[in-house]
Length: 130
Image (cartoon, rainbow, N blue to C red; front, top):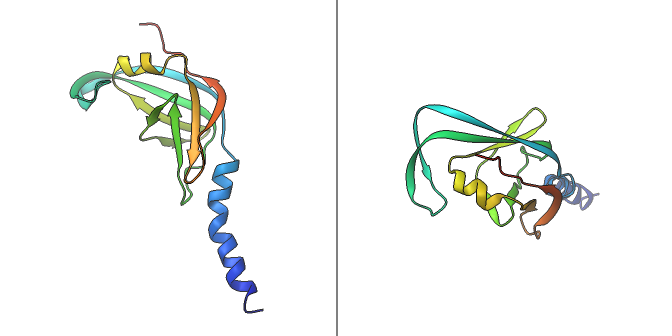
């Protein structure tokens, strides 16, 4: 009996990571360009900080667990999505530099959890025509 409770507790602690690793699904996405009220400082494709007057809001529909201890890392090709937020039916992230969108063009969405290799999805990013 004494060994059962610690093992059960360990299983509960490990479960969020297992859930996150096995339950990611990316179905579709949309890209919306929005003008900013005030210029926003952000890093460009070369890594330099610049001021941008518009943002591209990328909304991804699907399942990405966002409330677990082990985060899901997202990528478009090899480009990491450094920050994303949850929506009712998926996630969203922001891209300020149109050159970053061009670098992402034609690349698959990928994801990884801590300690696991990145997995490629069937969803391929297509940058909007300017």
